[in-house]
Length: 117
Image (cartoon, rainbow, N blue to C red; front, side, top):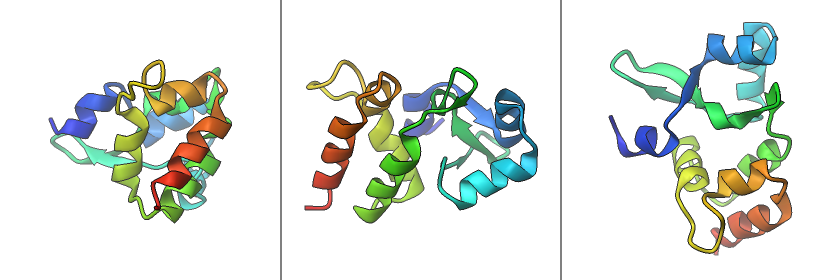
């Protein structure tokens, strides 16, 4: 198992994400195309999956899409974005993803913007 897989812990395959959100798999693919979520190929079979923490209360974390856009603008790949979101930060209670899940999007986006410098 690679480092990012271990950082994230729980993953959802794309069909599992569709079920979790109660949407059609085609909508999941649109979400990926529109960068509402990002996926990685994980496991022995290299199945495209998203971190389970991207989902909260039956929906994708509200501030995730904008944060992913800022990370992309800062030059981060999908894999690097996932790693950044799930890496412990001593100045936060946990990870940037924990902060997003608790509604601290402005602070996290500011941090993501600073990565470009």
